[in-house]
Length: 211
Image (spheres, helix red, strand yellow):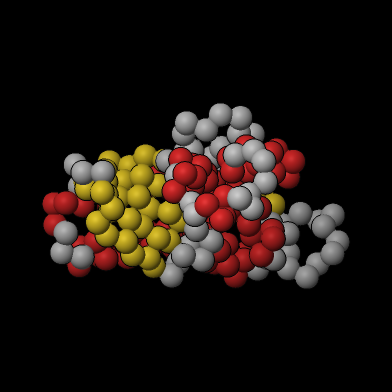
């Protein structure tokens, strides 16, 4: 069975196709979560930092019947005095996010079609990356890609703090797992320089201390 993993990063959306447990294709498109944030900043005339906050707190890739009546406060760009609220309907925010997300998935779909893999691409899609956590994004991906879509999270990793156990850290956790499981394949001179404790133990300690 084939499966496509789509990692929506900050500036790039990368994707890989697995068939029979083997990696057979990789590609990327130069669009990601930061492009969504930039669209929000321009569309709502606010700062990048505030646009990112709005995306995380109120953003969605799918519209609902209550979006027009639900108001959100958008800080005005360059205004230090925020005592006077600037309310806009949530539908305006979603109307900015949805087209960009659709564009990303349409580009991925086109690349997969042009890859020549045909049915080996399969019917399953796994989403990872920070932007994959936007509300409604999975449903929109399912609609555009016409495939079964789910969110991918780090698995088989005990002791992770909640802050780093979501899809945004799936790639990092996967790389750490891959390296820790193949530590015996590292050259002896490199192993001799490694500090005591397994790679995963030291990485987990760092995550606990910094997140």
